[in-house]
Length: 177
Image 1 (cartoon, rainbow, N blue to C red):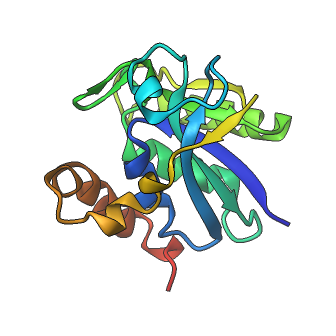
Image 2 (image 1 turned 90 degrees about the vertical axis):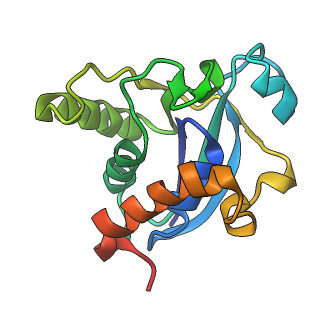
């Protein structure tokens, strides 16, 4: 039985490239969540006026990779202490958010944030939102597997490739073989 996880941590291209490497992840789809405009476009979301965050929706097998493990990877590949930004990407569309699908996911997310803050890993308060996933809007098809199709592009080399490398080094035992 698979479950869904919907996570926002900056550019969805980065998140997709990181999560699709993991065993137990069956699908990663870029999209938008948390806003007030039905079926927003990439251009609308980038304007910062729709209230949406760029997210990935992950279909995963919790018997292979539990939700908490997905969150551990999530908190490794983005800075959960910067409000409405990741690196040079600035705006509410780049906010850190867990859009939970069940009360159990909410509880796990809240505990993960508590544990992260207690660890002192970031040295600053975590600002990640934990909110219900009311709606998910898939992104346009040209965003699918963006890193794989554009690995030589400067943004991919400078921003995405280091995150992918970090996941490979930190979570080697969780990678697809």
